[in-house]
Structure formats: structure tokens, C-alpha cells
Image 1 (tube, rainbow over the protein chains, first blue to last red):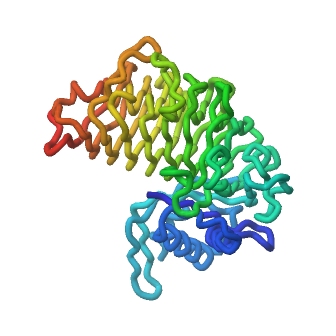
Image 2 (cartoon, rainbow over the protein chains, first blue to last red):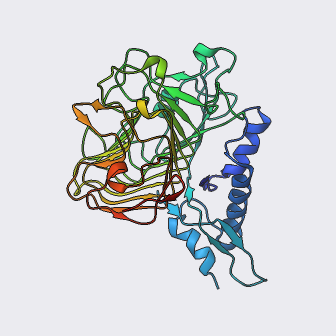
Length: 72
Length: 326
């Protein structure tokens, strides 16, 4: 099981995967997540990224996700 | 644009204030970039940048997209069987369209038993339904169905260093692939489903392969094909429809873990001039990596009968009701 996170880009109206998902559901497209749990995890990691690292997509690396656990 | 995989999280471990939050176990793919939208039921496509003004074909969205875009695809109408799939052969151009993501939006399950968003090639065309020539593609929540017209080219193809491709580091997550038995290729054709040529750093996870003649094929030499991960997938169907679930030439670092092979030993017989009839078959002398934690629904307990492993290392695997004897 894996999920995709679209990290907010650097534009003022940049969107994350979960915000896009909400828009799609409002428009009747259904969800883009295979499981409800995936959406929860995605939202959680998005929140962590924004809160702890203040990232936009210009600095997101794969290693960022590991650094969350190493943060002192 | 820096994008890659994180590692992570079968569970979250939250500690107190000021303490680290541990996230471990589940792969996470980061995908930045402009969202694009596809709605195949629209008579006329828009600019693709909003859901109301979506493109009406996947290819149109690809053509309009820049690198790193994420393309959301809406399921087509379920009630009209003939048009319930995207019948097109999508090509992602080399170099200019790296880091594209294709994500299916889902109304539960859509066309019959398939996932909501279903893609297949156009009738009469011997070309992949999705040909990924640029690097770092991500494909998620999409169903692919074969046609008889598709032969060895693959239903989905991601080549690197060959066939005009430059694709490395791609991922296929929670997709399904099925052979259309009502539109099957000629009996002796080696029909490839997910075809990875010479590529590196590819992840195939949480996918379903239904009656695919050759499920995943990883071709080319060890110098070119490296670091392929195939895990937590299901392979099912009738053994007589299947020649081999995973076919590998020389690959350096092929991981096949925690998959379920839910059919009897493949028995398709000769395809493309060769007989495979195994769950896994490498015809390379030095295909390296590991096969561990997989479950094979066969009563034949011996490795040599079920697999042709070459230089691969075996961990613990299971057959019906037992460990598989090495």
C-alpha cells in the first residue's frame, strides 16, 4: 500500500493532494485515494511537512520524509 | 525538480511535545506540480487546468502538461459499456515530460469489476495503452485492459536506453492489469503486460494482474536493468491463460517480496517461441536479487517446478499450506 502526496507548490494557489481530493469529491469525481486510511496518512504527512519543515515543493526531497523521524 | 520516494509508515508513533514523530514502513511518493484534469465524457475539452474545463483525452492532457504535472483522470460513464474506457494509446514524450503523475479518481468500482478509470489502446493498434518515455512517472489507481492487437510491445511500457525511452525511477501503485479474454492475442504471441525495458529504480506495488499472459517483464542486460521492486501484488486468473507472472532477463537487484500468486502453476505453453510456465522465470545468467515472503497457490512444493530463479536468492516463500521447499 502506498499513497501519493502532492506537496503544495510555490504558487499562491498551490494545492496538496488532500485539498485536490476534496475539490474532486465536491465536483462528483469521487476520491483519488484507494482507501480512506491512505487519505488520513496523506493528510497527516502533509501537515507534518508544512508544520515542521515549512516546505514547498522546491525543497522536497525523498529524504525529507525520513528526517521527520530524526528531528530533534 | 527534486522528487523521490520517502520511506514510510505502516504505523505512526507519536511522542510527546518536542519529541520526534516516527513514521515508518510505508512508501510515500511526493508529487509536486500543476494539477491537470481529464474528463472523457466531455464533448469538448478545455485547457485542462480545472475540473470544469478538463481535457477530454489523456493524451491531450499530456500534450498540454509540463514536467512534474499531476494528471487526475475521471472515470467515464459506467452505463455505456463501449465508451466506459479511455480507448487511446497515450505516449509520454521523452525528456520534456518527466515526473508526470497519472492518478485515477474513483467512484468506488467502475466498469464491471474493474477500477473506475480504465485505459486501453485503440482498436487495431499495436502500441501500448500507456507508453512512458520520460523518467519518474507515477501511475496510481488506474485499470489497464489489453487488446488482441497489442503483442509484444506491452500494455503499459516504460523503456530506458532502448525503444526510444529514457524512463527510470517510475512507480505503479494500486493499479490493475487484465487480459481481455474476449479479445485475446493469437495463441503463440508473447503478449507483455507491464513491460520494463532496461530500466532502473522502478516500484510495482499493490497492483493486480488478472489473466495476464506475461505479467511483468523486465528485459535487457544486467548493466542496464537495476533496482526493480515488485511487492505486495496479486497475480490471479486461470493457469492456462498465463505463461509467466514475472519474466526477467539479467537484472541487478530485483526484489520480489510479499506477493500473492493466486493461480495454479502457469500452463500457457509456447509463447514467442519459448515455454515459461512458471510463476517467475529468468532467462538471464546473472539476474540478482531476492524472492521472499511470497505465497504461491500450488500444491507443487518444489522451487524448481515453480520458479526458474537463476542467481536470485530465496528467502522464505509459501505454497499451499507449507513452506516451499528449496
